[in-house]
Length: 187
Image (cartoon, rainbow, N blue to C red; front, side):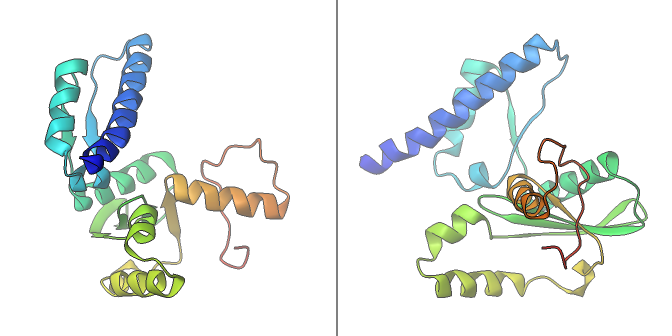
């Protein structure tokens, strides 16, 4: 019973976030709302209950996408928002999974999703050695197709790393992170 209560807390927070986004969308007079869910909802034991509640109370239909589609969407957004590069790999480190997409000549040519997210690793492995072993084990699933001189990172984890590097470099923190780049020597 206590476990059920624990599941309700993140569900309520997610519900309130959706309600807030819906309010913003209405204020902006959006004509169409598309709601997609990723790893957290894919793996949630109460996902059906959450999806039904959101549709009933907010009128939003949620489409749960797999990791391959999540990787593809990240790559497409990078193609649409960043300078043009002949080839790059996107990396999206989330809470439950990490997605990679290889992009060549403005086309997504390969994707993979790994069961590596900062929350998942934290919850599954207690010691630092266990965390490293879990990460190494999952990373073995990547093949050489995902090697690239240019890596585009997506999401909150990447944003925090970039902010840390910016601070270390004395970069003006008020500037936008969008399209910020650094070399591996900087990191």
